[in-house]
Amino acid sequence: MSTPITRIRKRSLASRAIGTDAAVWRMDGVLFVAVAALCTISTLLVWSSTRTWTAIEPTGMLKKHLLILCVGAVLCGLVSMVDHRRLRAYAPVAYAAGLALLALVITPVGSTVNGSHSWIMLGGGFGLQPSELAKPALILLLAMLLSEPAEGTDRPRPLDVGLALAAAGLTMGLVMLQPDLGTTMVLAVITASVLVFSGIRKRWIALVLVIAVAAALMVWFLGLLQPYQVARFTAFMNPASDPRGFGYNATQSLIAIGSGEIYGKGLFEGGQTTGRFVPEQHTDFIFTVAGEEFGFLGAMTVVALLGVVLVRGITIARQCDDRFGALVAAAIVCWFAFQTFINVGMTIGIMPITGLPLPFVSYGGTATLANMISVGMLQAIHSGRRT
Image (tube, rainbow, N blue to C red; front, side, top):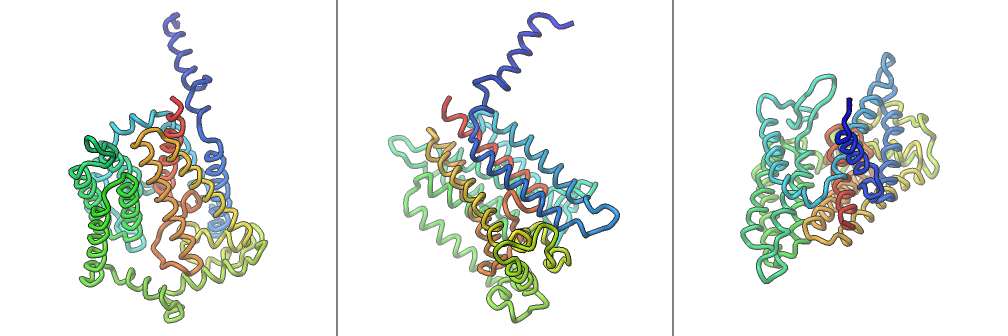
């Protein structure tokens, strides 16, 4: 039998969860609607691109996708209810956990998928890709290190900059051991964005650029890239040189998007999609499904919704009243913007194929969870600015 004190506590918890002062009522509604719309479109595109895989269970991938979205929504909601200033305390723990998982991947526990030893298989057709979770974890740590300015200035201390570079370098090094060049590029963009927005001196920025260029040249000339990675860049420069090999994906992608014309062929009516001519069409190349079945207007709707997410993220960063929250929001925006540009660009032939999914649209368990956690962080920052 519940006591009066127990009832009071229950009412207190309920009021904090759904009361007028609850974080749920202070969320950014536009951001919420844009992400929800992208997830809805994603569900349709995943269903269309995977329903012909097997006659026994044509909705198998769809069910997995919906389950992942539900888990992601729960994580997003939980993170959004945390005061974003408290995330600073969790940053070292999140970063350490991310490093531990990345290190675990390169042991026999890790599994290879599509040439990249990036996965930990969980069973039941599900896998964990720690490099995706490393993105929000690295953002939190870098923002924590670089949000405290040196005494008498508005710039971070040189020691903190050095620690940030070391932390980012360690993370990128573990990811490159997999190897996963695309995710390494995203981590580099995240690091650069936090450094720039933290207000470091120009000479530090120049030094980072020199180090980045030197590292890229070393990777290329020492032959540290895998043959398939080199072939992707070669095929990008001249897809017609190997149309049946490494240029096949790019060629079929252009055919699929071009065939959709203005209005598209209709959901489930895409010949390229139904015939599975484009590999990985439910993940890295899902934008081709939108282009073929929804046409130019549908594809641009996806881009516009992603643009809304970016604009809201920028607004949240600008309106945040503390450096930590602003840096976190700015880094998330740069991450989503870069990954969107690369993914859409590789499907229309203006960027090389790098294996990066389209945020909120591509099928991908860990990537979807990382994206939703990051949206929760944006919502927490937006809610916290009024408290």
